[in-house]
Amino acid sequence: MKNRKYIHQMGTSLLSIVIAVIIGSIVIGLCGYSPVLAYTALLKGAFGSPALLMTTLEKSIPLIFCGIAAMISFKCGLFNIGIEGQLIMGAITYALIGLKLQWLPMPLHILVCSILAMLAGALWSSIAAILKVTRNANEVVTTVMLNYIAIYFTEFLVAGPFMAEGMIAQSNALDERKMIPFIPGSSKLTWACVIALVFLIVIALFYKYTVTGYNMIATGINFKAAEAGGIRMNSTCILSMALSGAIAGLGGAMLVSATYGRFVLDMSSGYGFDGMAIAVLGQNSAIGVLFSSILFGGLRTGSLYMAMFEGIPSELVSILQGVIILVISAPMLVRYLQVWRKKYE
Image (cartoon, rainbow, N blue to C red; front, side, top):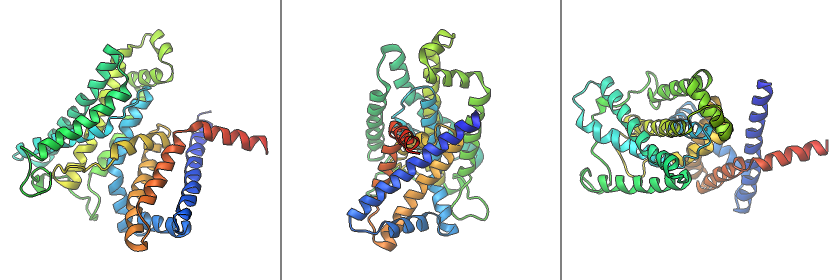
């Protein structure tokens, strides 16, 4: 039964991608470009060479963390739309604390700053969770509003008291010796990719073998039944949102410590919002999040190749990505097509 369930979930995700590709082809054609040329350039730009593949995997790292964060909240039946803000708060915390603790040795520096970044993300997401359980505030609204607060708060910090010299809104740079190093033999991938994979495995084991993970899943499946079964709903919801925010904050920490070396305004470029689509496309499973993150990382890398070498606007990839999100967010359409197919077989 489990194998059939996984096959069905995989088929649903693949069907969603196929539908999105078909709709995207129509849009690309209407814009006066060849869909075949566009998709060929997209695939070549994402996976056409070892260097491009490394770039795709590097782009996928923050997406994995955001996908995990979204998956955690979804499994508990919560809609954490604030992953973007939590990632930003984790990133600014890592950057500013990292500048103050540069006297620490590199491994300890990364560990301490990452833990504090996770704590910042957890505290930021817990605001929405506490408002939900104490005031019945809708977490969709509160997390969206917290996104704006995080964005404008960090903008004030890096455009004001913590702004580095120059015209760009960014913090001072961390010592390069304190950043996450590259994997030997790779000029693109850092050990952050290993950290992401470790967290994927840990979260998968957490839901499979721990009582707390089971309680979160039970809450997401049936709130009333879980409450009747003795699960403490308030603490479970708060813990789930805090864990989701912590992973998002760690994603921000990895952006600073492995990619930019400092906090830069608009450094996220929508990673948090993509994380929600990744979790849904991946059917809220760890392995699904991994492959969906690579897909979305490929879309980001391939779109740049399309624009630079084929003259095809990268905005068309944004349309394709939006169509994917739209399709996977409408499972009723997929179910209808499956029923329609069976009807005429």
